Image (cartoon, rainbow, N blue to C red; front, side, top):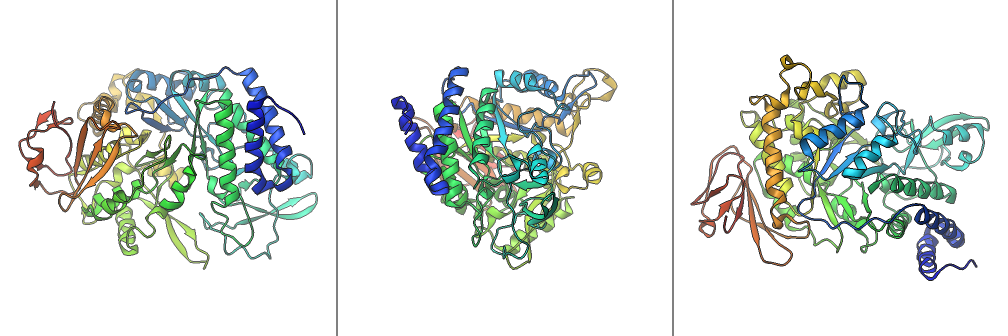
Length: 579
């Protein structure tokens, strides 16, 4: 047995224990290979200070090429300039969606994990952002592009890629496997060894990796350490719930998958103690928060139920299910929290509504989104029927009206949705198109043939900012434009939030029962010294509340002392006892 310094001996033992479930007797040898890599990382890279969460934390989610200009700069440099000029005082963390060479799915079919897509920029551009902001990078661990060198090895029968993928007979009963798509699970591939059928959870271009081969795990450890060395402080494990496959099961969130998440957490804490692990698991709520483990898996999980619940609440003007769900939220483990969001590069997932909202109301919500220009993506159930998986729509246009149709309250309704997100326990994350109130991009859907493109518009910076041609009337500087109104309102709300200790991620949250159509909660600082009440009118009606306890409290949003609680349609209040 190889001997290590005491600290690494403990590290080796902990990894061996974790790896014994997926890899059995090979666990010790695999752990030794990882120890050598971590030792090398620590020798080559300086340590980073651990960062503590606070009310000043806000994430921005963006593609590397959402913004471009005519200057000849790379899109990543354009993004850096926009961040520095307009968002630096309100955004401290940037999630750049996969910035690697890819073949499909807007980046999530990675060809080369270790390169930056040259159409976006280079590693220097990535590191420039990482120097001034916390950078979140994607580890697309479940699958890789069929155009990758690893898959070319598989087709040619060459190592190392020959054994990196999952072969299965088309005669095998795979009906129990959970499917996020309605595409075939097995893809036929002509190889030098004959016709093979390989596992492809998401599409025929995204081929699942075989983690039962320890060499695949080691490759991913190398990639993880590489991203940390390049400046990433947060690692997002994409589609991690699908990682481990076992015939006869649903192949979702299996114990072996959790063991590998624990392994990544352990490696990050040893190699880069200031780093954070986030899991992307768009599944029902209880399964989602299971990725906290026992404070030994993800530091952060997405609050996947929040976007569809807020949308449903505002679409129907009811607090009922949002209150029920939020009232049942558990206390999160120490050093664990949730990422609150209302929109992302994907659609609005519907799976988290399972068992929370009646199916007929989910169907009515989908119908409403169709009327507002959206689409719905389907998934195949084990009985071969199809079920709505996600709504594809720009969030701003999802707020065009209610189930009764469009109305004049789109802006107010949208801002209410963002204020709910900003107020709830956790860390808020804005998809960049929410900041801009970007509408449905139907031309993008038409050009790509993919419904998710509806929410992935690429903005020319000159259309947003007056830099080159004044006659363009750039949207963010035009005071009468929707984009300008929403953008500056949200920035002001963020500035207010940053100064309020009741919005610390660890501040407690209690849901309040005030009145029909009202969603309200109490936030209290961790030391109990200060309280804030957030109240949101989910309806298009004026609401007068009989809540005399809050008379004389100060509203941080309107900057007014409240004499009585009268809320305009979709108005929100952040009330504190004194100015």
